[in-house]
Length: 277
Image (cartoon, helix red, strand yellow):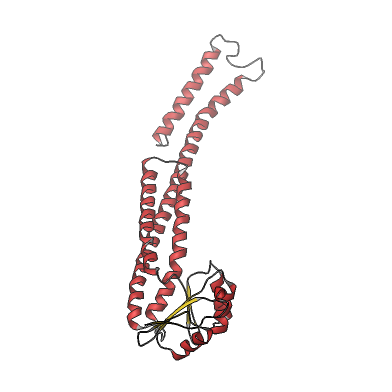
């Protein structure tokens, strides 16, 4: 049987409410006096739908139900993190209760997609080095941290709801929370694994970058080592002295060039023998 109690005159500022009595009867549109009475009785199930955009309804939470002002303040903020706080007469929980299980399960495709993205980055890294890959790595890293930031508070709240004895939650209800809690544990393990893999990908990228830099420096050092004797010989014969060996000899130029070639070949042979080339 459904009955309706007298609602206040300013109904537009009064939240919708429904109460299922222990005898199975249902009451709707409860008055302030009736709403104050039901929590004191402590029987049945009461649902009050408060509009987060109506400040008058939030004021009723404190006046009618005697909720703590800090708890009421948290209900005003749309960015309040998922949390659970225990007070003397009630437990304050911030979460999307109706769609909680579905919301947790919806993270699994996101985690799998992120894991596939990291695997793809690792494959690209070993197939062909791309300097632009660092942007994709940090993009995946930000996504991983975002998932962990959203899932972490859920796990904390569900851990409390599942494992801490509470007079406000029936044991059979805790079983459902435990199932959702197991899902969050699996999610966090997957996210942590993906984060570790991503850290390995980033470390590999930095190592490859360092190796490429070392190879370039090695090549430049080889060029400088080979060119140094040539520069010395050219510098000596470029000095403005009239009396120098072979300075006026018709074959002097070719002797200098030949000396440069012999010295260069000797240096290259020495580098190869030391396995530096």
